[in-house]
Length: 198
Picture 1 (cartoon, rainbow, N blue to C red):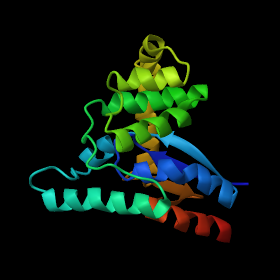
Picture 2 (picture 1 turned 135 degrees about the horizontal axis):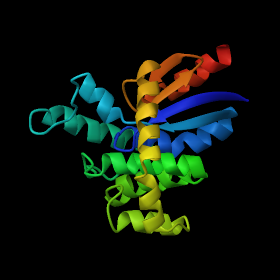
Picture 3 (picture 1 turned 135 degrees about the vertical axis):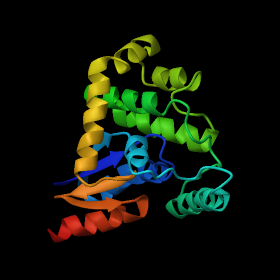
Picture 4 (picture 1 turned 45 degrees about the horizontal axis):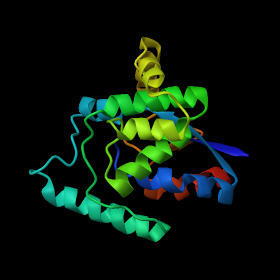
């Protein structure tokens, strides 16, 4: 089975589309995706690229929300937009994802987080939404918060971001197969095509 690295940040709007459909794609295409949380915000700030900041980019922001809504419908699910954006707890949301990937519940956490964000308007990593998600996963919020903010998790978060940047990742979602980077939900199928050719 071929493996594709899936680099993402909770906080990226278009990543909602990939997260919500990647499981079905995985089964259909017999591909394994390796999930890697990182800070796309850090990379974009380093590149002096701050997207969708109202009111100066309202036209682009409006397009983004409508585009996500359309594409979700193409895939057979819904997106209630605009969703809360930008996130107030961006780093914490991703640190929890890293902890979850280490402990085996990360993918379920990310999927539930994105579904609640885009289908119920509940911002990631804020209360009571965070506790509700963790309780659904049979996890203790106080313990998760303590572990997610451990310096070791933060170091891993920084290293993930550095690795992403070195690999040529500059946005989320990104898909990498044997060094080839494909950026954006709409490039997921292109990455799979490339993997099947190589």
